[in-house]
Length: 540
Image (cartoon, one colour):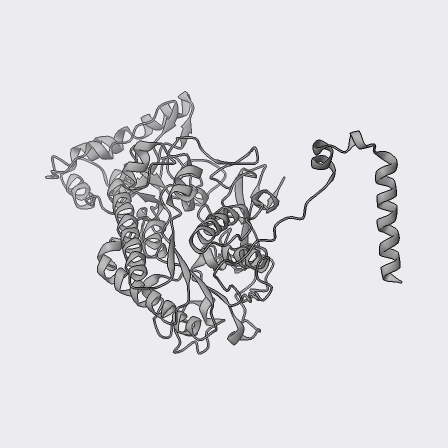
């Protein structure tokens, strides 16, 4: 019966074709317009994707908008890759450790002052800023650990990849605790090596300098805490083990960090004032400036000019508490002892003992946005102590002051750029060395893609130790006539945390990986339709 029906349908098609067309009508143009050829499903080339293993950090896990949550996890680079692999290899099964949470657990905003668990942030279009959602605590993974394919762990550094007990309860990384074979003893790499693998992706190293960057450059510089030789030894060890049985794979290098919105969204001179307000502030700061200049009388030999505070109509520098400055406290006390200032004046100078306005070239972190222009004394009825204007950003009346966590000076930026460039050099050399020794591994460089998306010009790319071939100075990536911007706007490719990609951003990187795979292993894995992926979540 089925064969009869099919023959009948074919007869009807042929009859209608000739009924509506003459011999003159059957042209090449008609065929092109009316006959749809089956699309090429692609081939895996020489690769077997059936047991694809992903090892990495938050970028591989799908962390976005400050949290790991279900939708972002489904759109991470590894899962998107697996979906494309499945189109050319019917045996592909890719199991992720489902976080089972709609909004996740925001790692920067928890614990909250209210005790409420905060989840991912979404963009509020009316405020033009991210706002939090209700979240959930990080829960246990209930699936089969032996069947996992994605070992992307948010927060993971290369230096901790082989650390035993990295998921130790209460003290370890909670994202690994939930999937570790033995949280008290196992390592991320050890657990990853225990599962079957036929192809792997490896993307680690960015967190080894990102932590320094997002903390405002606190602590030792990245290359001091994790030298190039240590980085190379750990990378070589991991890749040697992953390729030891002949498993092929790709290794991604590290993206630029300080060019991302987390470090660029707030300008160093973000304080906008009208003429009347600026004049009032200048009048109020006259005594402060006189006292700062008078410390030279008390024996201070440092540069007092960099600490003086003045305002004008328009854009003004943010006033910050800078722990790297000399503390003027003892010099103010000397002025009081010499009866050059009163005890009341001395008390009013406490916020300015280590303060200064930012200067052009310094970067303000997105984390400062929640504090700028809010009241330092908690009194919201009268705007008399706005943070970043009257009271230095990072100064506290009640606890230890720390303004360094909200900005990066030029020396700190240089340390970050140098660390990334150094680590990338090690990654390239390690992959080349393994390839020369017979390992079937390829490098995927993401740097030019970031240069293109961020719209860096050649001079900026050179200053940041980045390749210049795509440095056209035009912001955004154009796909099918649509420009996707390097931010967390509705047309952006980044999530609202200003660091991690949104699904479209993940799609762009996924296609970059596929291009390398297709070229290296003579495969024809289809690329992703980036525009079909979601951008960011927002509310009007």
